[in-house]
Image (tube, rainbow over the protein chains, first blue to last red):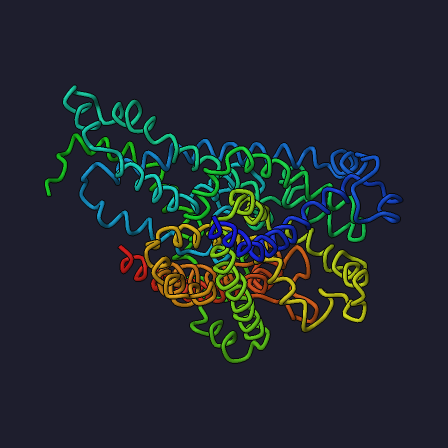
Length: 277
Length: 292
């Protein structure tokens, strides 16, 4: 008994450190929420405390006046299509790399994995030239194609690893029953890979939603801008409007925070592996 | 190994064509194009790509002081990130691994910023650092008013200040990676050391760090690579200022290549960036092989 109480005392400094640091980490986000929900007058007199009462004028003016409703729509369209297409393209390629012993697979797979190393900012200039020659500048399609291509290596990598961890008896049984390769993929392996498929969709959505550089370069028309680009220009114009900036930033951050709180496990699984990207 | 006969190739084509076509057009081709353009004085628009040999590389390496400033800043950014992401990250993971309550809460708290966009981080932290912002108000409130300043306007402090904001949004991932590693350490090691009377700092130094060496190397390399890719957070705050104090390789490349349309020069910088990242990625893959 004595030993246990001794151990608890021992842990108190650890609790103190963890509580202080985690508060410091969360504080910027919490203060941002507070600031977003205050009118300029409220902010002037009581900048650091919760808003009393909360007002939504900052969100309203970002949403309607600063056209964040349009940016939001653009972000939703691009990121959703990204996530959906990525699931299929990456898992099909991963299936071929995992199970079909085709000539050249031992060359093609490393070539894909090498793509994990390419830093996206380095490719921006030649990518711009390519998009330009295909007339894909200022189209959703151009950004989507670039997103998919640049993130493919990572997702092929994690989905293939998952496929290889599934017991091969399941595939062999389907084989013996005479199922085609596509049927085995679609009816057996794809459903079994659901955890990694969900991670793929969430992570690709997150990366797409949060990306600035590709959108800054490929989407120059205001009506096509995503939230990240919209936010960049918004803060450039309203540098000293703390509440306005906070609300605008939260329109971008809100959806991913909610997704994260719902799908913590998948995000943590994916992002710790995605650290390489 | 037996390869497929012809009809089964249809399957391979079916499964791989979308990925391979995308990858060739939007990753391999631009990567090769990058090297080619870096040897020209192309402006990105005109149909003529004048071959200039190594002129762009010579200009960067021998007469462009800003390029070296950007390189130094990037290395400095990496050093600060290493201290925060690797050392502090490891300490935090070590503390969370203790038999405490609320592990999940702490993990989520540190992890939450990692799902934020770089632009969001930039906006939040610019407000933190403003002359009338959160940090200065806090300093004044606790009687440390003499330390208040315009953090991002300071030539010496802007870069470390932004690097701290950068670590805010990446440390969570490292804590979770380290935590996974710590939980794989044989508890018997700790128990026997405790029997010998080792305190917590000794356990950390003599058991945790040596046991996690491969993971530490991995996180170190990934942090360095991450520094060479940093763009958003700087672009949305200081854009490289004041007077180039926060100019990083990625922001300088964007300025010269995209905004000043000096494609050739920008591409030479990109080649440099790829070389640095490739060197560290190769180290990383060696490390991974050793771990297996």
